[in-house]
Length: 185
Image (cartoon, rainbow, N blue to C red; front, side, top):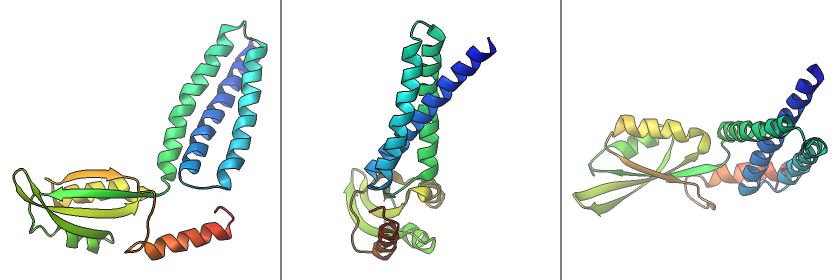
């Protein structure tokens, strides 16, 4: 009985590792880490084959399948947590503020953000539109700061695929140079 529990635990851990690596590999692929993603993929598929082989060799045991499925589900949750922790890349935040004379742009600039402003006409009048680029690691902090400065701001965010020029150019170029030096680009 003890060895069968260990075997179920092994199946669970193998599939958890496989799915977590799958999530990380997908994230690296989407972010353009061309050298790291294939290496992670090699480890991922090796773990997958071993785990699936263990289950297929003993397909008549329901508990093996259950451990595999549980490992898959927990692996998804762990992969999401790892992705949120790594938070690679940048996020573009658009904040629409009802008060065009608001000092929010200056406040955010003082906090170190690059902010581009424009004016727009909404259903209820003029609006101040802020475009703010930040790292994904700073995303939640930025949302909180916007809310503290201007509680009525309407906020939308998305991940840009291409960044060139402006406030972030030097930072992005430095990062790309470092990646090239490490062989990741």
